Length: 552
Ligand code: GLN
Image 1 (cartoon, protein in one colour):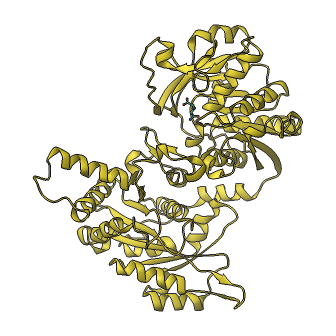
Image 2 (cartoon, rainbow, N blue to C red; image 1 turned 90 degrees about the vertical axis):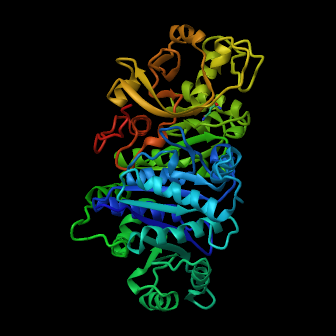
Image 3 (spheres, protein in one colour; image 1 turned 60 degrees about the vertical axis):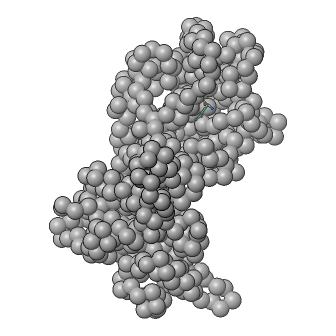
């Protein structure tokens, strides 16, 4: 294949229709046909990247290997197409304007008037072309927001022009809409879809495929009506009902023939690319064939919006798939521990996670939860802030440093066991920069963590400012906590564990970002395995020992 093909996924009628999952599922289907697929998310908001956005409002910030702080949809993309993406896979209006305005300040436009069309639209198109230059056969581009939004207009204009530039057979427009069921009339309604397509057409885009989201399947009659009124072939009207698991979606869309119609639009030969879905079908089989249950509590700060911990939740589920376990995730507000959520309640859990986070709210509750997990032998995985909390707790209650804290929360603590590197090196300027993206770590031979990973050099993604304070390392080791993973230069503690405890593991990294539905992350598999052991009294077997790629 010579020319790169582009699929643009837009949405109408309502937000939260699952554009990201539809796009990801299409990616999976095309990859299962042997095409090289990459994905891009265009976000119409003005933030330059999601890094500074409140996860309690916007959901998690997904971190790429190259340190991009990106939209959570990139997590779905990576989990579904099983490719590691980079920061170039996510552009916001803010980042696009920043580039154009910086260019204007440099004088690159030679005194011309700088405008949305062509300068902003050209920058959008340029970024899309660059994504295509990565060697992909197909680039799937999801446009955030909904047609009709003010912010989306430049993006629609750019993708409209894109078909002109790239050639008709190289571009496919997929539009997602909602087909509501109105109980009083007992009917599914197509009018919102018609209006949404009219809106899209008013921007010059005629969709090639319409994906109809609904709670009940769309009948043939209704498909015919949508086909007629929205001017797409009937087999390009795809019914997408709510599925019990997100991992069912690729199979459901395959049944509706989504990949066939997209490939036909893009002049991709289906006979040359038969679909091979057996690996994915195996994932689906595991999702629905569970024979044990475990309960994992997540003690965090943004638990009212589980999207804030989306990758953590998926990583827990993936580990469950590999153990035949259906996992009930209990979201626990850290601030309510231990007063309202007591030690007895936490002791009822089969396992616990303290996830990443920023800011002081809930910190004392997390420290209390870590102590309960340690003293009650509840398996615990501490992620980033979670590891820092485990380290602070251990200092306070085992090392005999009751004032111990992270300098993120106490600048006057007499025992800064977690602090900025600059503080550890007595540098006066404390402006902490974020450690972002993939970093390698060396694991200690014979440690529990090295055993789980099955290797001694691993790479994980990071997003934090504060670090384990090396000055305390010997004290920790003398009191039983093992610094079992260290950066190659020996300056950063990346993993800690507690020998003798069933599972008390902390990592400064964010392992959740690398987990895949068919290959769980070793640290999550380790936690779940310890949780099953707590319930059943013996160590379970992994159905398939394949775990995710952690090589640097
Ligand atoms: N707030 C902590 C830090 O900056 C932890 C960050 C996180 O959990 N991602 O170091």
